[in-house]
Length: 122
Image 1 (cartoon, one colour):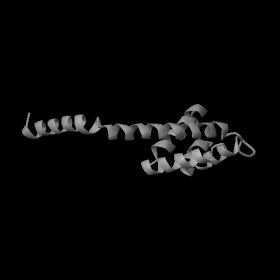
Image 2 (spheres, rainbow, N blue to C red; image 1 turned 120 degrees about the vertical axis):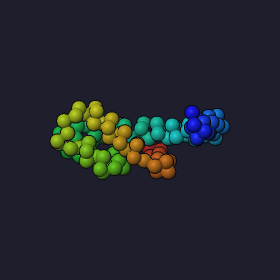
Image 3 (cartoon, rainbow, N blue to C red; image 1 turned 90 degrees about the vertical axis):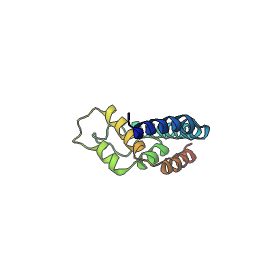
Image 4 (cartoon, one colour; image 1 turned 180 degrees about the horizontal axis):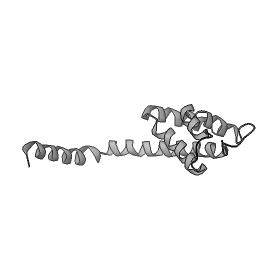
């Protein structure tokens, strides 16, 4: 093993033991986990209440909050979900819409978006 590889291995071990397991890092990770789950819990009913977007729907079913939350999902992601050319099962497309929205968020956006939805939810 080269001296550079050995140094790299030692630095990774040090970071794992002293940084990744540090209380502040674990608390931040836990907070992120809570925020993501909270957003998912609020967006999922909004997505499901939409029904099958490929079928003609007069108005958007669901509560006012579900209508608002669905409208806050990125138009690009909704366009893919609502595409009449998409042959994937509805359940899969719903999961894909939720995953796309969550994975496209920055940390700061996720925090403010979760707060916004939480404050508006009845």
